[in-house]
Length: 129
Image (cartoon, rainbow, N blue to C red; front, top):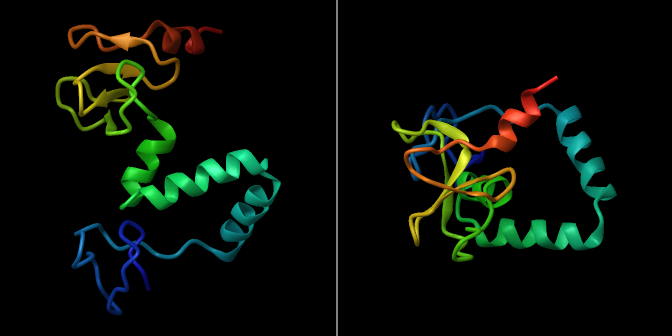
């Protein structure tokens, strides 16, 4: 078995990865793996190249997810970004933070946000009927 986060080999029965401390999770069922393979086979070549680059440049699964779902900072262009899901003052998965310049931004539309108003109107528009 391998760690989902750091991809290192784990001993049988491990509950936590001894390398990165990520919780050990069961491997997805064969049907789920096959569904992902089919999706990847249908992906346009330029998008597949970008996805492969993101995988190669990410050290952990969390870093990969941030590259895909958060993206680069719209203010300075840095790829050193993450979401604010675990920030006690913001607590929002859809708010991105640039660790280089400190800017907050909407991960959906890229709008720059202020720390005191770290919400975006585009999210309210999506919720309206």
